[in-house]
Length: 278
Image (cartoon, rainbow, N blue to C red; front, side, top):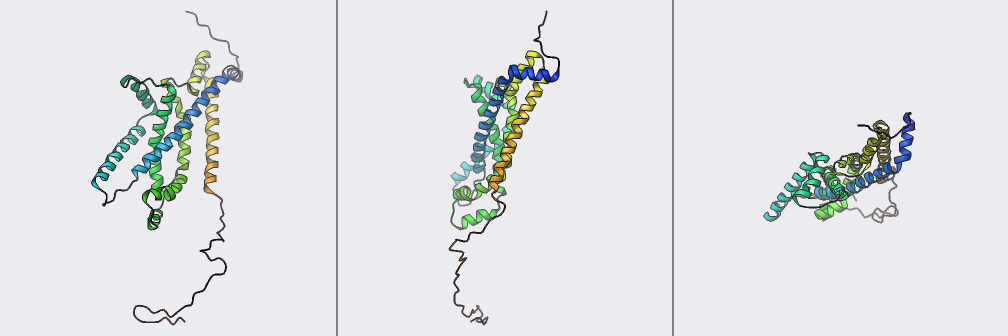
């Protein structure tokens, strides 16, 4: 049996240039698929994580009805199982289980785009649920007590007081999840997702030029992760606000100009003693 290999230049860099010229468009298309799955999966996963994290932090009071306590216990137990399962198993196993298992058991015909978004989203949601829960608990308890002291409900306290502070605390982890998803989408090639790794493997197999092809692939992954790391640091700095703040001087309650002085009377304590103030 005779094998015919396509001719390649002899030099290392010449081979890289040749591969880029011939398959650069395909590699860029694969990188675009990788970014689309990672970004959409991270956004949906963050939404799932926020919902699950919020439910996990719903307090149970002694005055609550038995029905509410039972429902909350069941819901929290289900969500805890979801978090533990998807945090405790590899994404590649989840992809094989959900994509092929759903088609076989439930007789569903799901495309790889739908499977990719779904798998990355629920995997990210499991990690973000614990991140959100930790971010909520990282906000000092005095913030919650102060909000309730002025009559806010639990929902109002979460939306207006706790979540804005928790979001800033967990912003670095959101960025980490995006970077991880950019890299981990390569495992979806096991279900036929034509992302960057799948395309690179096909190109490398065509010429048996694995070293040159995956040198290009590593550089492309590195460019994507470095760029989004920089972008997320910029977002974090914008969320921090300016380093110096000017106190508001127009608040009428502060009486910054023309404060009034009330007449002072003798202060008499509960023992009938005066402090001599006039």
